[in-house]
Image (cartoon, rainbow, N blue to C red; front, side, top):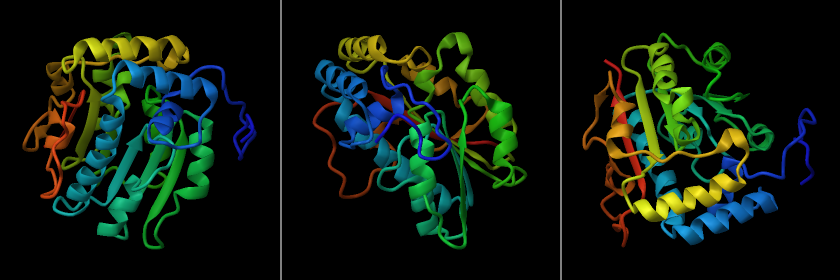
Length: 271
């Protein structure tokens, strides 16, 4: 792969690690660069639970989307920070349940968008769209998403392993609230976030080595259980609340992890 996105010739910074590409490396993908591989390897060496956690995070996303597309009847999803396409992307899971589901993906890495245009192909009855934007650009995201989504109807807002890249100075709680405020009653917030209070020393060290190698805008901040629960203020939390990844609606044959995984997750419904 060269250093430009396939569509639009957008220059890509390969000298610093980027979250989507580091996550791709943790999942065993090939769409990453030496800086991403180094950050992924050093962070995982500092905290070996990272790799099981990112896999459990993908599984949580799938379970949450199935729940919303099925029992909750949600037909639209806004997935911000989607990352490089992998198995069981949001639209694939949703459209297995409801072929007419519509999904808008948002990411700020040109590599993600180049892959998305090629690989995230909708079922004929549904629709997908891809926006290159940053989570901080709420107004831009909401305006563009309305080309595909009807915001007067419930939407599943996916903020899965993304809010750690918004520092407290940029008020991630206000950004989340602005997104939810624009969505119809009956919408859902699906969220996961690295924990600073599970394996605290290992998490702190892994974040340190990652942040030393990350682009300035992509430094990560883990948060506590109470910090993560605060994102759900104004929603009705679905059972079992804010929990570790494997504890949110596990499948009957799921095997519990040998160690606690350092991420919190939950799903809340907007009244």
